[in-house]
Length: 123
Image (cartoon, rainbow, N blue to C red; front, side):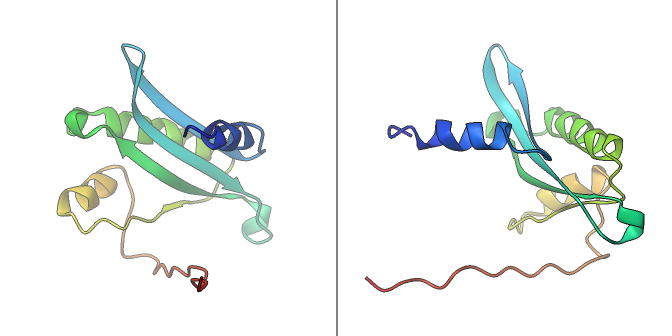
């Protein structure tokens, strides 16, 4: 962003314990990303859990294995951090997106996700 807010947010992510940004580059260009949040937990013998967000592969490179590669690294980082589970949500209704997540080891029939957003302010 021209106002520099993207750099400020990036620095906030980099400096936050438990948060990791994964990036795959090809020829100096970012082609895939994931974001891992390791969250401390009071149950499961205090084992943390992971939430994965911002799973993005450049559209022209989808289906080339880059997504599986970055997800494998992201999940391994979660397991290395002692996480007992890793979760993600997708807003996609695309069958290929769901097939991708299943191929990466995720199951859609274990939990139900709900999402709340702040109310819009009038103005």
